[in-house]
Length: 461
Image 1 (tube, rainbow, N blue to C red):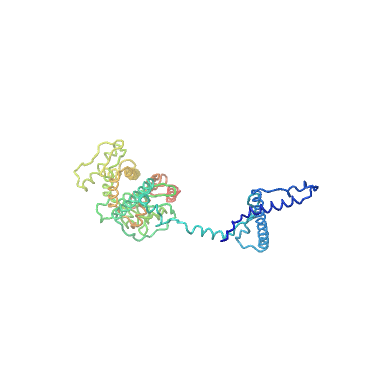
Image 2: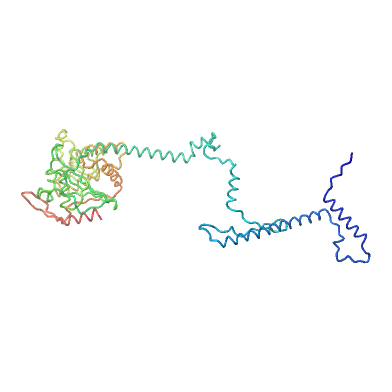
């Protein structure tokens, strides 16, 4: 059996062939020939040098390929630049980058964007990106616990939000309960509704207080106060309208202002105010004087600076009130005044009705405004339970022509107006009236233009 030839090594064969060729050349060379100019012809190369020569040949071939590819790229790019570009096209990708390969510099071009995007898509298509149900952390026990409970700060703010939401809902329920207690009536026929003193920023509600003893009886109004809330100036104004003002009552001729309610109810009184003073009256709220007693008692009474003369003068109206209330004679009488004298509802009503001490009706209207202001100030200091009781009493003794939606809006207006500056006004003002007498009645004959200017200046500006 023939012996197989040993597998040859190309590098060793090349080295052996070169050696034999150079040996033959050396043996046949002329001894007189000078080979100093071409010493490489007589050089023997090591294996490392032969490897370097082969690598140089491969680099040269690759460089030739890259140069041919770069020439083709520049040719195509020159053709693309000569064609019109589409809107939003970014043009070529810039000059080819130069990268180093050993001792040579090789030119490369940017890859095509679409091919790169497609390659990137294929590269990432196998990655396990976890969202939703596939999220291992979310589905772990720890993840479920933290996802459910959240961080400490998150739980705190969520708790605050829930508390605020509960308080808001509770407030809404309370407001609707108060509204349900109010005696809401429809507005009757109005004859005058075109007053020029009007603004969307101002709400005017006529507060009517009557001394009637019978709910079915419509007597004269001893207290007429225009409550004005100006949201632009953030002011609340209480304007007393003097009961003896001699005015024109629509369809009824001339009479005292307090006769309008007896002749035609709250609507006629509103018309009379608009006609004579040219001020818009949006709605009214009516409270009888004896309901007023319950309101003052519900707020816990009020503190008033009282003179001795006023304290003694309160005896007559209080005697009438005690008889109506069924109190024992002499109940709540005062013998002297003082600073911050605490008055209950019965005493506060007598103080507000006091007419024959001081400057008659002028001081009486001032006392009425003072009592209302004291009630408001006292209500601001009540605890939640006492405030709830006070609002229930007020609502249960109130009659108005506001519907439930209007009452809801007006409640918030009153709530925000608690921080407004409180002002007091009287119509007619000083030097805008003189004393008159008509059909045996003592009256105040007034300057209507001066009254209108006063209302415009103090309420609307």
